[in-house]
Image (cartoon, rainbow, N blue to C red; front, side):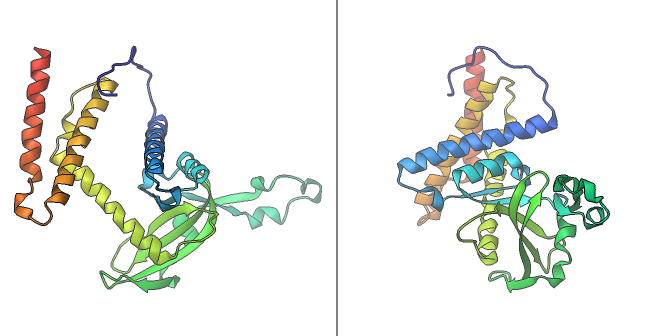
Amino acid sequence: WILHRPSARSRTATTSGKDQDAKTLAAIELLRTLITHLTALGIVKKQLLVLADAWYANQTMLTFVKQMQLNCRLDARSNLSVQCPDSTALKPRPAARRGRKRAHFVRYVSLKQFLGNSNLWHFFTDPVLKRRVFYRRVTLTLKTAGRVTVYAFHREDSARPKFILTRAFQRQRATPQTVYSQYQQRWRIEEAHRDLKQQFGLSKCQAREGWQVSGFVGLICLGYSWWKSQQAKASQNPEAAWKCPSWAEAFYHWQMTQVTQAVT
């Protein structure tokens, strides 16, 4: 995977939509690999939970999640379009045309507008922050994601609500408190991205070939995983643990030295 170079490189232009599809497909391929590996270890799919930001809240990802019967918590933007029956268009339609599809008599409103004023929702108390969290759960049809169940949360000290997409049809629906606490774990992903970019030089790759970028990312993630495992082992003796900035800087300079020697 790291050493083998493909025979040809594609130079086709891509649009933002194609870029998003490519990123979603890459995430799906990663999930397939993880599921295969974890299944071999005896971990069933019901124990897995997919956490993702708003980039992956699309029909492609949700279709994959439904097919694989995975539990998911996908962040969603407030401007997503919700499909609603248009009662204004339904009433005056001629009797001779009543056989038309109902899809012609729908209107779209934003997700935030559809859910209404958050002050009228039910609420529970955040056990850590001791703040009230208003919530609402509703199953609806989105224009770009199909049929989903949306969990909406709005903490009283926050300016904007948070919308979480899940599968529409499940035997046991998770409680709003469970979904809220599970999605809080996604911040660890952002912390990992920060360490990979700032401390391990993930954003310093100057390669343009796809196989070179894949190898660079693979080595960086391998080093990061090894460092985290060493941190876990040294949890009882924090002074013995390697600090991330010093370790990453040494690793980056060593890597640049190897690349320079290979070029010369």
